[in-house]
Image (cartoon, rainbow, N blue to C red; front, side):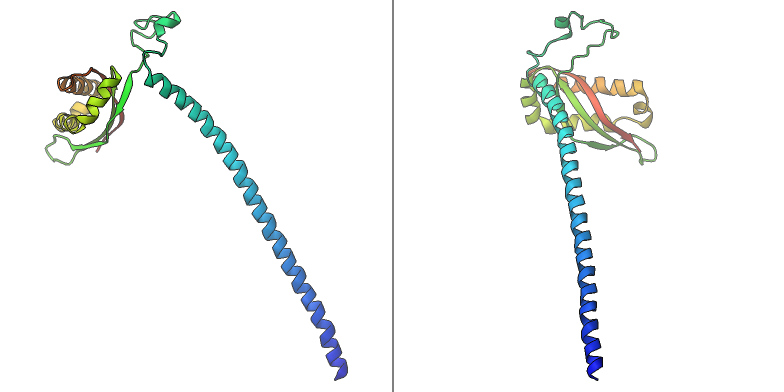
Length: 193
């Protein structure tokens, strides 16, 4: 029996040694994986930070130009005429934008199951008009909803129909403002179902 106890004592340290080396290997693997994740996260953060910095610098330059339109160089200042200067008479200058919330209205239809979802921005002539429009937002939304809901699928599904819709919105809204003029309407989302 003494020999058997001696064998058990010899096996026990060897088994513990295998457990310790197995645990050590597991710890090393976990540490390596954590390091890989951390390094990957740092690289991702650096890469996305550079992308945001580039987008931010472009966005801030655009914001500065739109915040002070009188200081922004016009095409005429660069030696090109803004009327007919190689662009078919279309001006490439864009005024101050005033975003509106999404409009969802039912279209005129026999079945009553067609609706229009539109998101738009109004192009303004001056900054002072933006303040007026902010206070008159409910009135603007009401006018636009009435115009949109009075249209049929056929009227809004063509390019000509969309252009006519834009003109109608600009005309009706300009009758309700006094601190400037709305130059154009830009649809940023236009879905008919």
